[in-house]
Length: 237
Image 1: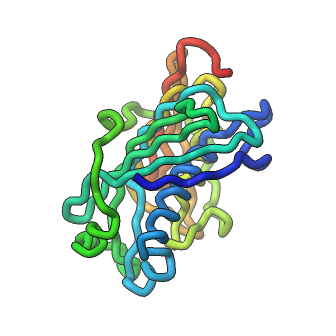
Image 2: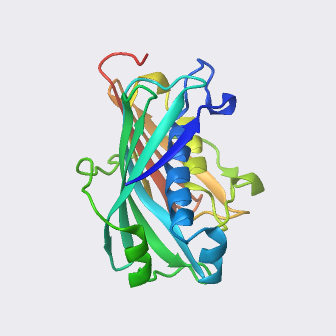
């Protein structure tokens, strides 16, 4: 298990002064990236190998809402590699040891040059010291958006080092169509295709008392991302 510590920054907060869902995904992503760097596979080394990891899906289950200036400990462990796929669990703890979030995630190893799947090298799997188990059975988003909004362009600020829209940036876009983010208890995100600079994103969504489903696709119907959120029975703190 790898441990990473961070402090909640002002830019992580929403209008109510609580941490935004995309910021939670960033904490998890940062822990995975820093873990990879610590075992010899930072972004420069991965570029030399013509490889990159891209997340396929998240299932994040949230406790109480995280507050400004809290010190967080993020635990992460890769628990499975097979073929081109890696699976990684996460846990976010408060300074007092309270579990604030748990997550499961599936990732794919790609060749950067042509975005095709690459088998995880044996030496990479060995460096990560695979072990442990999934924190819970991963669930994927299910639903279909009915209400639509006008398509908007991908900007250069959406693009990460892999040359496409970053996964947490996609989540931020999708979250803008969820009416009550303060009540979210579970977030499921599945990434289907990459979006690049110059592409346009057409959102569709449906909301209910139980939560919301959002899909982001090209105007021609190529699905980029789908996200489902489930509300807690009571409002978040």
